[in-house]
Length: 111
Image 1 (cartoon, rainbow, N blue to C red):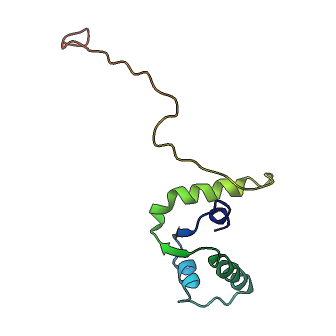
Image 2 (image 1 turned 90 degrees about the vertical axis):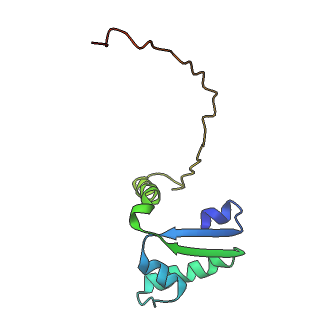
């Protein structure tokens, strides 16, 4: 939520594979542990920074990328900011020079 806020997002749709967390954030489940109560207070405060905030539960197998990033960040204990920016590139930034080779039907592999 903080990264989205820092990036200037006004609308946030977040996903979690934890039913417990999603239900606690939505208020369906009550948090009893002091640490969880504090986390939920922070979430409530951060929610006010967005015009819209939604947290949806997804199956664990659909959360592979997020799991990877969370494990990566946890390994970076020596990193000062502990932030990782990920940029998805739908196509290469450098133009590729692709050449096609036409093969005949008969070559050294043909019996």
